[in-house]
Length: 320
View 1: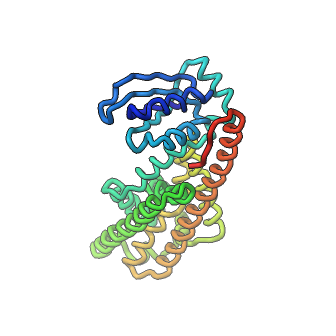
View 2 (view 1 turned 135 degrees about the horizontal axis):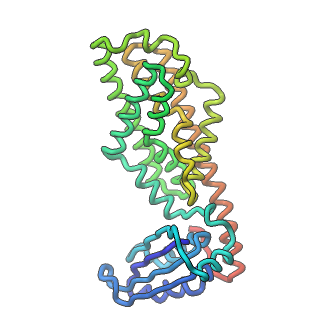
View 3 (view 1 turned 45 degrees about the vertical axis):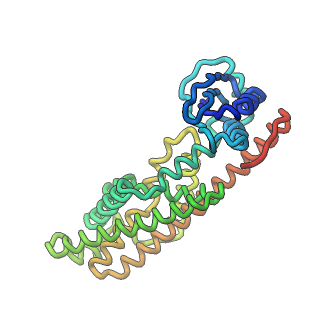
């Protein structure tokens, strides 16, 4: 169940109420006249079955509510309502499978923002990955994978293409490029210091690493794992059930590859640099394409469901 809080300009309130009352997926509706001071208008609160959330939100956007007012979307975790239960039964689909596109887009913008927090996590993860390779420690590699924040920006590329948010695509691409470049540069500088201090030797970088060799030795399974992980990540991103996200983080070799690029560059190990660069490129490309394909499939499925529901209920529908 979703709760929509709408700050509606007075001139649009009747349209908002009509949209809510004509949809059987809306199980609860409240109106407080004059409650909104900015913009001057009314407060409308509605309880909507999650499966119909996109349809209701799209019709509110057609009214222009988001331009002159605001629409807040909250997931109701626990609720007791016979009317709400019946609304969910009447609405086709499953709430766990439903993609609330406004929610996904908002999250994608937030996770694609290039800020000090993102750069800090990316840099720390890459440094940890470099240490993991020197020590040949799988545990540290996994820790670096979990710490890396890059998946949100990778998933945002697919969201941007599916929703035609090209500004979001540019933001996500910029965040990925600058984030990896800054993290590799910082790790490279620290590797040079460690080399000068004698903490790391050429043998530590170029010698055998049976536990972490996969970082710089890409093969066909690298692409397969990236595709599977990205598909799972896209499902976790869009679903009400997101517990699988940690598994996605520890399945792809992006941050460890970046750490090994920095190490290889610091010690002049060209094979390590190129192998890791290929690994990084394969993983990023595979994840971006698989994420886009998964989101596109979800959009196609839910568009058909929304069209059928609109026709059955004689409701207006236009894909936004």
